[in-house]
Every structure is written in structure tokens, then in C-alpha cells.
Image (cartoon, rainbow, N blue to C red; front, side, top):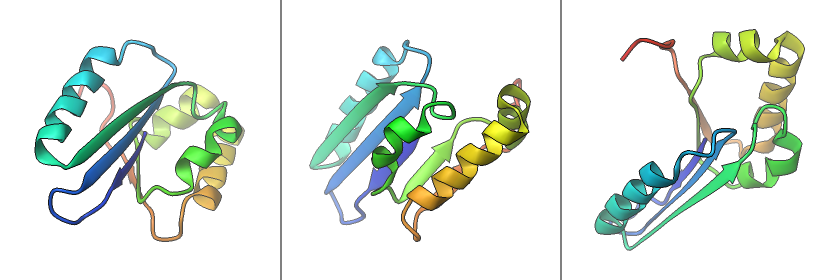
Length: 113
């Protein structure tokens, strides 16, 4: 998941969501509606893709972001994708994002809130 926020009051928020599960429409509509009430402009874009396996196809999406949120733990990433694939993804991500971009990684596994 990538998120870009321009920090001036009532300006704009751009949210890019990337997932291999297509059932995001309802949630993204609510996010867009809420963001439009708070900001001058809100834009939510959904990409149906496996970000780890298809990162090269979507690298341009990450080049201008100032916050990237990974909605899985690093342990889940390595377990699901394997050490080599997970490491390649993380290295490619770090090389692609701007130097001042933050990466937020979930630290809670499934079943936690």
C-alpha cells in the first residue's frame, strides 16, 4: 500500500492501494468520501496486483510517495513469499522510493488488533 499526503491544511490526499484481492470497492469508496470531506482533493486508486511478485510492473507508483505502508508483517512476507523473493522486493522498494519516504511495517500478526 502506498500513501501520499500533502501537509498543508485542507489540501490533497492521494492513496494508492495495491492488493491481489479485488474486494476493496466498498472500503475505498468510504475512504474517498471521508477524505473529500476533510481535504480539498482526495484521490484513491486501486491496483489489482501482487505487489511482491509484480513490483517491477508498478515501481513507478512508488517513485513519488512519502509514506509506504506494508499491511503484512515481515515474517508473513518471508513465510508466504520465501526469503529470496521477499528480500528482492524489499531491496527494490527501498531503491525505488524517494530518500525521504517512510516505510511503515505492521508488527502485529493475524488475530491481533
